[in-house]
Length: 490
Image (cartoon, rainbow, N blue to C red; front, side, top):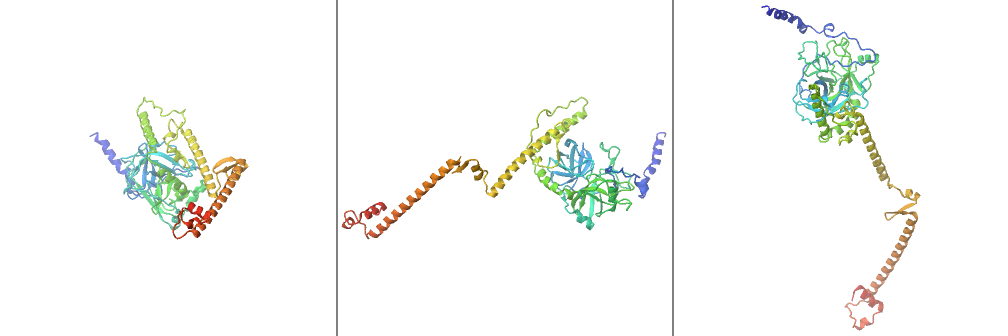
């Protein structure tokens, strides 16, 4: 009986602990009284969600879960069979061996196949302190097979038209569980978000695209929103029950096209939630169009070495973390020059910061060597392109590689494809001219002689052939006899 008393006491407290499920949402009971950060401090997204209904992945098959050390870490968007787009700041300088991608899953804590990330490409203007150019591409090793729950999404080039016409926007991703109404939540912990309870269920919100005057409050706090950013969504002061989702990397989709990705902002779950700020895809279309074909067309064979190195690094790190006495073997010697792989000649054409497993081996000892290697490849490519451009320009203008004026100024010339000194060229040309004149004279004399002989033969030839014994043949002129013999009439 004494053992049952604590159980009865806990059951009495249960209705009180769950009483918030019957509460109506109000400013005081559901939102924190948090003030805006100090002027100049960038408000980082808190991954909270409010009034975000559950959805299935088939409704948003382009949404993917980016894992870090197996657990969900970031929301991404599927662009092609091997390219993922997301925001840059959560994965900047994170080793690819820690990252993986799961596609086609409703829950962020499930997935039977982890796709290996081999390349990370960040925009060349990305600033981790201001979140300018907060955009990154992930190249996975395996090729994804499309199906009902896995499909890519196209890019939106005209977000301004959607803003003017008030189109509906959808934001989808995985966030965290909080005391935000009556939504069911299955909390999960994460080693990277300590103290937070993450919700593994996929959720989505929608709102109308329109300019919002509350975006000016960011400027009042010395935060600049330039053309590469997009400030959209409702503000809490205008609608207390407006839905919100502050999930980094969550795609903003308008008219079934990707218009932006959640980057930063003051919200959600605060008394004075502001519209959130997205990375504007329209501002980076040229960068994406220039990089996507190169990364997409890199073959698996070209990435095999990086794939194996990434796998080995994962296993080595696991062995190091799971065993107290284990010395990690040196994979490479840091005093040796880095040799380029076949894929490096393609990656060197990209603009931006490119990371793979080599940048993180032995605490980044080879990062500088890799940068120097790419710089050398770019210089070589620049020289080759310069030579091609010069050759093309000369070919179009009809000017040889060394023109006659250049050779003549150097005291040389070309005769019958042979490079000679100028004096030899002049003498050879004079000899060739004399030979040509003699040949022409001989041809004229020969033609005249043949014509004369042919005429004589035609005038003196009888109807029947004559032999040497005939009297008429004996009376012919000597020239006629010679002509007949020469032309073969006899």
